Length: 286
Ligand SMILES: C[S@@+](CC[C@H](N)C(=O)[O-])C[C@H]1O[C@@H](n2cnc3c(N)ncnc32)[C@H](O)[C@@H]1O
Image (cartoon, rainbow, N blue to C red):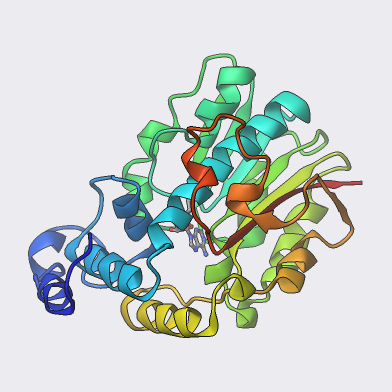
């Protein structure tokens, strides 16, 4: 990381589509959110276009890598809270990402082996690695659904084969809703999912915060994403992200930058250093 503009262009032209695609059934010549995240988290499942977009993104917004790592750490703390403190044993993790350390079922089943997790993502690279998500503890269960969040009814129907929707479920939508544009009505999608789960269920969200950037950084980072990345980018402000939790009770400390959500007490905690531009919160349905 930390390349010059010329190096970024050269990397993007490194015929990522033609050479690396080979027989893959998808286009690797356009950066994808899942593979960019994988690159920043130190994974190997990314292509030249993804790496070039990350480098360009870092030039526009140097805290991008910190934000992504802080988001992943938030996932761990949120799942630990839900399992250990809220007593949740069922999870619907939509926008799973390429498997890495600390996947939802690993965190939950380390505390409660009987936990059941349904993963959902629409990226073919995530699908290709889904096996890593299916190594459930024998006391629990995991399932992977290759589906688009916007096909909400289909996801709920298939998830109901693994999860008992008469018992509380934690729905996690982490770093996914900011790639659902307003034209796809993300508020209705979230409401539909939360309508399907009973009282005592939880919703965890992390989301790019438009008011956590200065205007110049936001504009230049949005420009990079909209030029180089398959997904559209819609950061939302505090009020707009809060609306995803309408009718629910936010768990303390409410909607805050992800690194400030119940940070681990140890001083060595990397999440405590830096400023992400991602909001995170967990709320309980009553
Ligand atoms: C940045 S990753 C976050 C992974 C994980 N939730 C985390 O926070 O560590 C976002 C994931 O959402 C997936 N995604 C984006 N839009 C989606 C959609 N409409 N349906 C399903 N998955 C989607 C991407 O493929 C990607 O794997």
